[in-house]
Image (cartoon, rainbow, N blue to C red; front, top):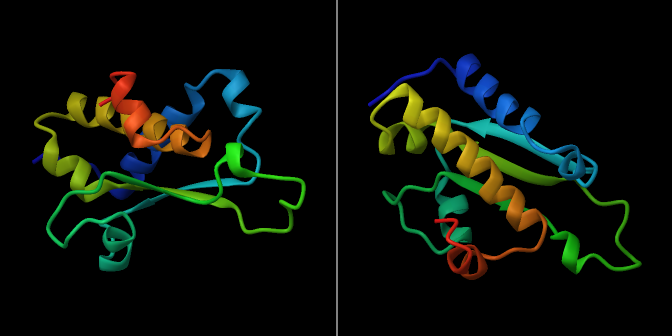
Length: 125
């Protein structure tokens, strides 16, 4: 299992965000991206997973496609990238870097209203 320090891993997530096209950045108002070691049991349950299953990232919020005229004065959407599970599924530092990039984009897709079924259709899994 490849190990990054928490600071190094946060830098990878930051780089993944920095690498996004400007058009995406313009649509990321009120979105917080954080890093956590592992998902909590409640986070796993919220997406229908059991303890022990690996969740690499989690989007919590109201997708842009579901926001109406009354959307406002709400907490930011939250994207959590989980270091432990990502490192567990990767064999090398390069794999971790690629997986962080993929996971950040995957969770941002949810922010834009693209669900897992559509991501599968697009070949994003």
